[in-house]
Structure formats: structure tokens, C-alpha cells
Amino acid sequence: MSFQAYLDTIQKKTGKSPADLRRMAEGKGFSRNGKLTVGTKATEVTNWLKAELGLGHGHAMAVFALLKGAKKEDDA
Picture 1 (tube, rainbow, N blue to C red):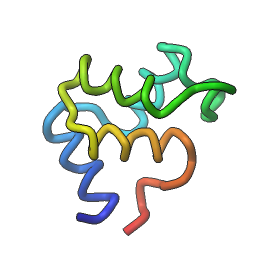
Picture 2 (cartoon, one colour):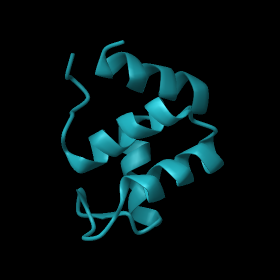
Picture 3 (cartoon, rainbow, N blue to C red):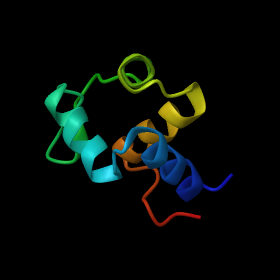
Picture 4 (tube, rainbow, N blue to C red):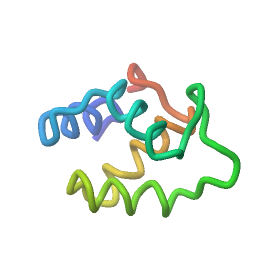
């Protein structure tokens, strides 16, 4: 599954776009100005996404990669 396919599936399941997810993460204090805050751990983000949005681990990790800047929406 491509990275974009993960994001597409997340949007279909939750109705949240990558921009929405970034805003939500900022609201939770996991990121600021588009960058993860110092000390934010993948487990914190994935636990939040699993509990709040019902994502599985792989999809939650895709969002973490997006927030971390390791991947972008247009990555194949």
C-alpha cells in the first residue's frame, strides 16, 4: 500500500484530511507550527489516533510519519 493510499483510507474512514490531522495534532499539543514538539513520541500520537479516530496501528503510524515530516501527501 502506498503512503497516499494510507492517507486516502484514513480520510474515507474518518472524514479527516491530512491538513485536518495536522490541526488536530497541534490542538493536542503534539505539534507546533507544522513540526512535532520536542519529546513527542510515536506511541503518544498513535494511542491518541487509535482511541479518538479508531485507526489501526499502521494507519496511525502513517499519520505520525506525516506529522514528523518523514512523508508528504504526494509520496508514492
